[in-house]
Length: 266
Image 1 (cartoon, rainbow, N blue to C red):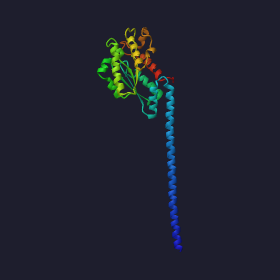
Image 2: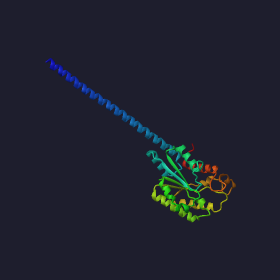
Image 3: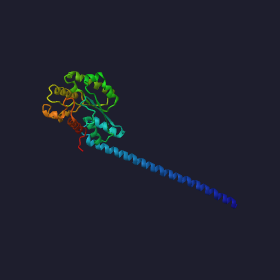
Image 4: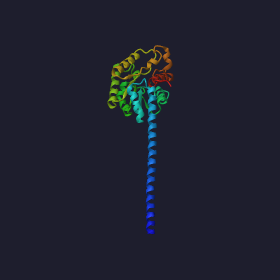
């Protein structure tokens, strides 16, 4: 009888040990899962807060930008995919580090962070709009899959070489091709820099401005920031051959665009 009782006690002890072991393993598992859930929740909350903070930041600075670009910026924040901005045009749209496109890029990075805008600069030197159509540079732009394009459409190179009517037709051809492939792309147009005492070129620039308004494109009228083209002062901002701005001219152009893309001064 004693032997049976002893065996019974041993069995009960083993059962209790097994049950206790299972119980504590379950408690430990629950604690670990709870900790992981809390950490995950904290990580999600932290990421959400960071996104909200960035959204508030860009709302402060993006006040001058059209709603379509602001929406792309917001999508970029929450998707962690940058807004692809492609800047292209003649040698006036210089890819040089001191050119206005790269100066603008640095301003965007400094304000919005280096991961909100992905900026690509395409300089097509000595090209007219007709040559751009013939060489189908639109396909090169499409391949970059831009969300926004900032196009300086060779209007200074065309001056005296391609009539304004043909210039606008060529611009339409290129933009139609780009927008057919990328229907959500935002189109921004701007002229090249002013030049001293030009006669026909300013009238062609006015035609480009009217064209942009008629077609519903954003027109960036940076000429308002330059000295009067009839004044000799303009020479202080332009290279001797008139083909490009000089270093001061690039800074002036970049400052205009910075004030557009970044409403609130830092």
